[in-house]
Length: 302
Length: 256
Image 1 (cartoon, rainbow over the protein chains, first blue to last red):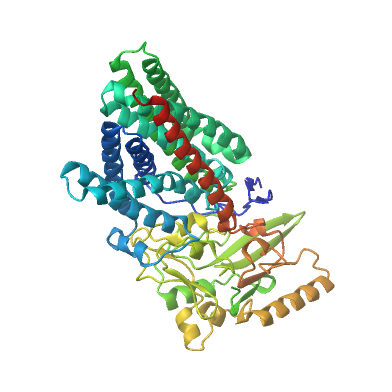
Image 2: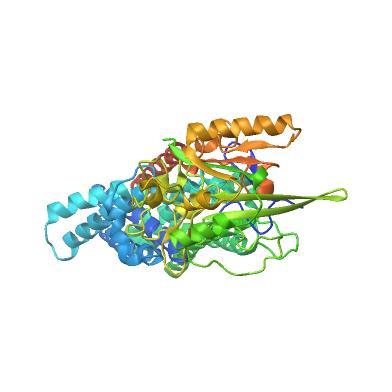
């Protein structure tokens, strides 16, 4: 009987030689989860951009970034709720604070971040509670990097081999990807001269995303087969191509040789690349968990 | 914490009658889990899941002209370091006064984190219900001083229930006895010093007659939250890098 090797933390291997029974259960998270990784990460990086831009006196940039942060949190929360098996019970997440659960820490972070981001936009849009709005903007800016990276810790703390192996680099990948997407979205919505910081962020983020992705891929070892091939592999290649091509277009615009339309196209490509990257990571999980199944009849895991 | 009570499942005297599977289903009112023909010996439930809290594994081994038939009743391990409990964001999974790990069905919101967290692949979500389910070690029966349904129903005492120190003693004595009889391949599984190192020991101890992987059990299970500190350290470094990167972009790109 053939056995599939499944690496564990300490370098040992877990195998199942029992027909049709993988060691680990497959994760059940549906498309809403990678979509949330994308919009939540974008929101977090945008809030940090807003806070820094505000201090630097770039008010137009800060306003648009605040809007992006609030919008991302507003879209992200319902995505997470709809992925639950019992969505009507989502408030049960807030009945405890469990430091050992990255999902618990993430929920509390998102709740605080979302209300802060919304409050900071309220200050801009309807002019209420401006000092409070400024304070809320600072809070969201500080929580932003937590919101972009905790998702990497979350999937890393599972028994799914490919996610387990990726754990050291996932937060860096998600941070880079979030910076790229937030920079691209804000750059596309701000008038060209004021958009330079966002454009730089899009380019830098995309490069950081690509570099962390390569480092992560190297650390996967044999467990990475499911990430390099099939659907995850296709999204992974798409992500690299879109992010780097988009970053190139935005960089050309920064250097003064590109036209505005090409910069916008580049921003769109960076955004699509960032989303594809999250889809690749998400899709690799179930494939990895199912892979341990061994079936002498070749029918595949049950 | 280590559980106070648990199971010792001695696979050397399991006869594969599945009385444990049936008793568990009846007592806990667990739904039917597929009356399917798996073409794998006498196994028809496949493995542990939301609707299978005891699973009898059947392994047919050919050794020359002889066929050896291994049977073992698998169950939730009620780990001392329980991954399901540690990652549960609602507190639905909790440690009982008996040291066992139980899902509170009125709290679980079906987030699904416990499912890929479990290194043994025990807990799963009931799709038509939306919540996660697994063995409760008959929490309701323990409260009434009754033994769990599976142990009560086992006709050969392959499954025994009791205080963990007592079970451990019994397991080690049985191993010694079998080894003395020449059963070289007998081994214990789930003790803090035998197969349970990575999860702090389990409340379900097994005596197996082959390597754990033959029964579909991980040979080196590790609670994923043992890596939590390293995970957050990585996230902290990435978060600082992001903040510095944003600051550099704003300073480098600002007008004037």
